[in-house]
Every structure is written in C-alpha cells, then in structure tokens.
Figure 1 (cartoon, rainbow, N blue to C red):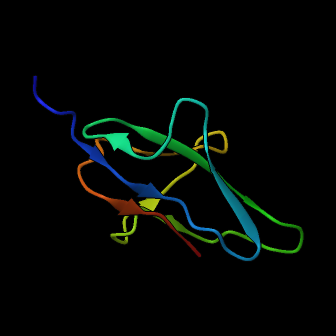
Figure 2: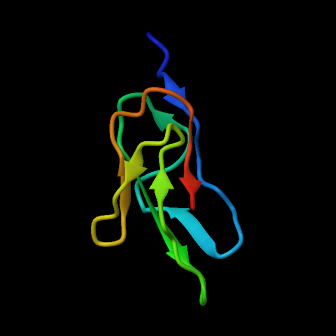
Figure 3: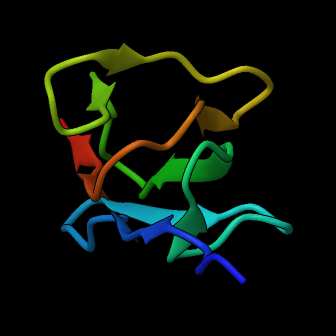
Length: 79
C-alpha cells in the first residue's frame, strides 16, 4: 500500500492572541486536505492579518480561518 503523505501545519504561539485547530483539523494534515483554525485576540489586542506563511492573506468566516488543499509544510503567521 502507498504511504499517506502528510504535511505539518504550525499555528503560532504569540503574545496577544491564541491560535487553535478547530475540531476535525490537526497537524500533521493529509496532503490535499483542508485545515481549519481560529485566532482569537486577547484583551487590548487586535489581529490585523493572518497569512498561510507565503504572504497569502486568509479571511475568517464566522471566526474560522481555512487553508485548502494542503500541499506543503505550512506555518501560519499572525500580525
């Protein structure tokens, strides 16, 4: 049988926010799959931008960010 290809998705741990995978999403993720996560600002902080690590801005829908078709190791960046 062919081995399942996976990629690491890293959510940052920073001052002023908390990032977490949504139920059903995790790392490593199967290649081609979708990963969903939240980024919540702490009191007094504002999230101005979230990217997939390649400067592609992600937009939250109902508070959830989505990266579709995972094709490589990915590190989310929060500004």
